[in-house]
Length: 429
Image 1 (cartoon, rainbow, N blue to C red):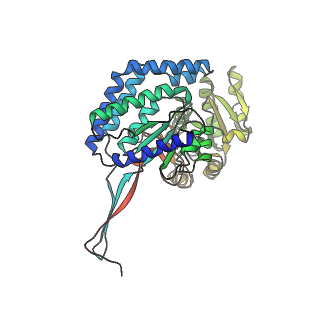
Image 2: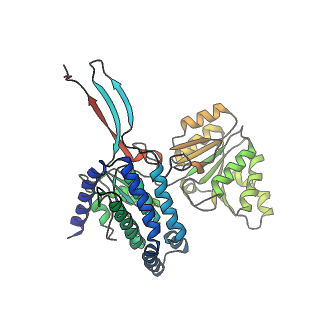
Image 3: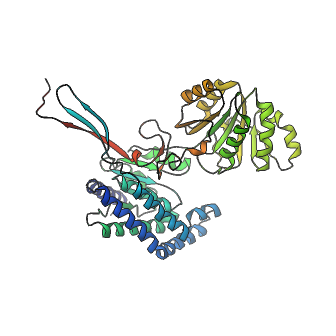
């Protein structure tokens, strides 16, 4: 069987499984998820043995210590996967909700009902726990899923999926065994082959770095929900509470700089820059944050540089404003009012998450209305753009697209809808 035939078989099996999944009740899905959670914990030894093979492969192929850490599965992380499955089981079923209902003058009753999407392909990198997370979310929302992880995690991904499938089959006789599948080959050509099968695959969701997501989006013939990068901004307005602005900026940049909702650029109104930047600069330099600033910023921080021998202050470049660092680096620019901040964000931003700090409601409302991003905040950190923080439970990713889901994607975002027409003989004249 060649690669195209192999991917076609995988997709056909998933499509058939999606039809069977749609028939499962909420109780049946939850019973399967709880059984899967228990099975992951019970099979922890086998999962760790498979993961050891992946760790050896990763080390021999030059994976960094950070990437090896993401790849590793220990008892704590396996318990975390199981806990995640139990949390998904506890969430409300997103399928079958009445989203809209209307009665026409002729007596025809119309209902808009949430339904599964069908077959969802998830493409991701090193972390094998994504296998359990993605599969459980797709399963609870009635979708069959095809999982393609990194080649370094193939053994881990396969045993996690097999453990979940076997448990599901024991928990419910009607469990479709192809509801969860892992692409069995590391051949890169498998992705374009799979994503050309528009008659079977309904949606693709890549999770990872910008290069991976762009490569998937460029080759896919099926719809792709994505975010390329998180270039997030904090804007300190002329009417900001500067203590609040300091705390929000430090949280957004320093708490966890390697994630997509961390701030990459700080914009400061020119009227408060002279007072605010020296105070904030000391805090940032104390946390070993490199500042890349415009001329005004560097002027305001010249005394702080003299006091911090390890401080790094560099001129900012045009390209820096487009860059997601995922590191202890922050662009800083002094701007002319809320208009200047909005124009900067809409030009350089990635439509992910942006925040204004101000006591001026008119300025805040203008910022909230005109910044074209998936999540826009007033007096809050960008770090809240997360399914758990939004009260959605588990999250399958963040979308910066405008069509379909936008922002954190939970169970509801993994559904589509259909219209039901309930009549008693109506015909159109």
